[in-house]
Length: 231
Ligand SMILES: Cc1cc2nc3c(=O)[nH]c(=O)nc-3n(C[C@H](O)[C@H](O)[C@H](O)COP(=O)(O)O)c2cc1C
Image (cartoon, rainbow, N blue to C red):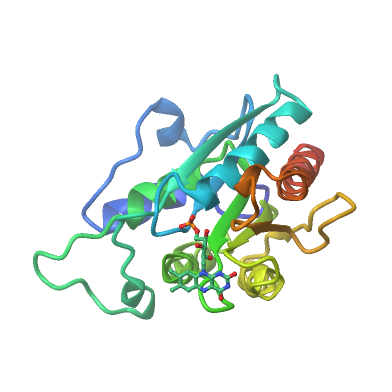
């Protein structure tokens, strides 16, 4: 964190300012530096929990953990059904009675144990899903706090129903947004995918098809190895 705001500390303030969540634990109160395992998050930006994007993320996360099981822990976050009101990022207050689910997600992302994340989105008309765009716009919270995601490693995975359905252009669009956060954006380290994990949900064996699997694994491995190198 050095000259950057303690992510744990800032999320606590942001949550308190929103009249919502309070950080738990003595470490949070003291703004302690990260210890223990490096956490790699998988964030599923599909509107359907547990489907192709979630399955592909699970493959990537398993591969990330396998890089060093004693040093890495992984967690999948599902955005399906969550209210991520992007207008809040533009300074518009929630209407009375409107609920918003971003802060608990921001707490997970902002936890100092997080060293990397893999953002998974379905391809929707050659672009990212709207929950993915909402999430990236809500990253304004981190952007405004001295780029609190500075040096967190990020990889992107896109799932399309077609073999060449716009996965790469979708991945690069998500990556472009992550550069704004001063994150360390990586591609997939393997031989079959360059920009990230390109997944063809329509394959006969679905997400488990060999090329899909190696693409997701290569991304997870690359995020994990760079995340460990950054510690
Ligand atoms: C609105 C919409 C637009 C889509 N557009 C594309 C597309 O442009 N290219 C493509 O390959 N698949 C497209 N698909 C298919 C999804 O990417 C595919 O079904 C994917 O598996 C969805 O992810 P999920 O299983 O995690 O929900 C589209 C699906 C929807 C609902």
